[in-house]
Image (cartoon, rainbow, N blue to C red; front, side, top):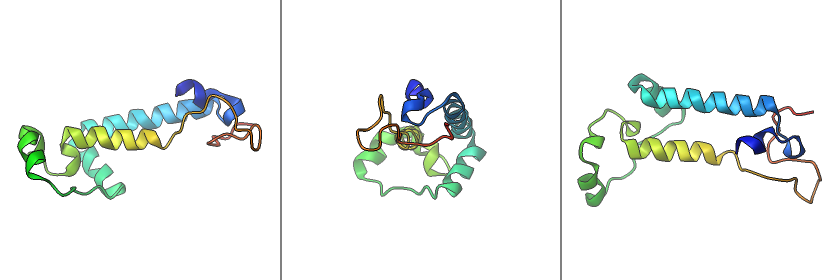
Length: 107
């Protein structure tokens, strides 16, 4: 993904890649800290998903926290959803040659 974020022909740049890398580092730090998880839960309106009997049994100690992101499985899913915001492209689309999926201010 990093190379795609740097590729000018799809709308990327070195600055774009650095900004996304920095954002994900900050996300990782927030997920590692209980106060950071509370901020993320509020900012992104993260709520508890309905729990099934099976998921409650499998959760074990991972469900003992104060919020949804205290469960490691929810943190993994949250990270995956965040990463899905950045579709990866190796080359420009045929329609509108040179226009990329994202625009990170590349000239």
